Length: 383
Image 1 (spheres, helix red, strand yellow):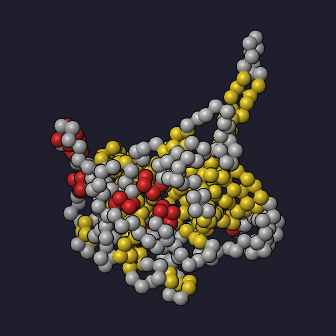
Image 2: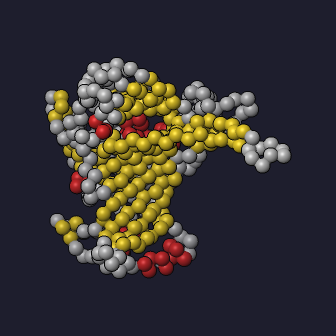
């Protein structure tokens, strides 16, 4: 039996701005890296260091999870079944009204932590563990809980392969508290794709459900992938993987006499670096020689940079199971070409693959909209 069943029992996160705790559903893996920065003390006349001082404690937490449709707001304790950003920004089954409402920085917070009402969002991330000396999956078993305090979100990404859609979350923390014998914890049964309360349904977001009608990929791909092969009237592009990511960086405003290592002060006066860089990579099977003449187009030779719209749409069900919805990952309309790579095609017989990467800033949002009459955001405002 895989140890995941009696080792890590679950993951919860608490939004500190609203003191709201939610169970994080669909987690496939959790990695925790702990490190301590040190300062070496040298002494005159000695060839070896005399002493070492420890600075603040640093933790990096990396989670991978599959995502479903909406989180059900009627469940207590709350569960995050759908995409993480949608859950914390738009309150379960609601959606942004316009691109200004969906703007990443507006929702994430731009204030200096500990100083304004628009602080950067912080989370307490709890990981539950169970020992292997007894019955597994028993609700009454005593658990160990590690709580990583005041976590900051470092990055969020989505990877769409031929097999699955994965959401990856990366957090940083500077303090942890451990608790033994936490008593029983109600283990949540994940029934994705099945009715679980009345006619309500949880549906997994799958690669096969991508909606080509409302998905928008950079048109420059056509000059490279154009094969004149169609299926049900839609051109077969041979795409094998799409990944998109937003990376968040922070800066510290330091102050003499204040040690930023306690659970209360570890993010004190932390500020957000803007703009937030985004990146989208599209990998596809090479079925003909790459038409790389696009590097000689006026876009690259005259300095007139063309910007591309990128939007991924997946068909799913709304959580009340009454109609189809679209799950949207929108990277805006200001993405530019950053790289074009060729790999594979070796003597071992693997396929030749092309990968094209586009970069942008700030525009990164996930939301839901009715499939029969979708309201798609237009990122026309300038900030």
